[in-house]
Image 1 (cartoon, rainbow, N blue to C red):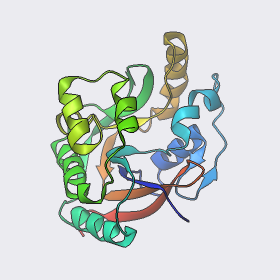
Image 2 (tube, rainbow, N blue to C red):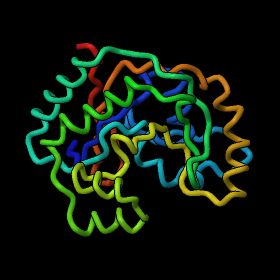
Image 3 (cartoon, rainbow, N blue to C red):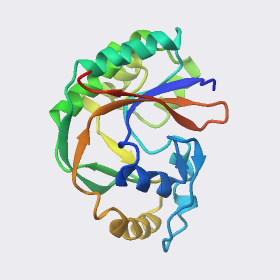
Length: 223
């Protein structure tokens, strides 16, 4: 399959409870490239998850980018980044509202995770095609701080490095009323998942021509 963009993400271990939950909730299993039935819930899960569905369940480390070189070289570089970082356990996750959307986030900062994300951004940047002026303008239209705009200019994305906030997105933008209802529906579904996060792999995702992201390859941390 041909992919037009790639991103380097955290993805739950294949077959894990967290991976199964994420695929079902979003309605898209990026591991196998198939749609999945949503869980029964007292809210319209399909509508709530319409925006994040195409990306698959993940936590962004290096945001999607158009490659400027052979993908085999990118794979080799990701393998080197993964080998240089040992597996680690991050703090327990929690369900949280981040602005207008819901996500699973860490209950406390994780220095190893921040270090890993920064390495993905910096060490793989040579493979990134710079964004167009139109793409930059679209990012700026959301309203960026001076620090975020500087990151956008340097790395092509504004929420990196000191602005990095690891999260696994569970919804699109919601009204306050819809967010309250969605949070109530999600709380029992994630109750058993709000535990320490085992980070053992980097995962390369690729965006297909239809806009859906697929898991291309997993890279074990520590080599």
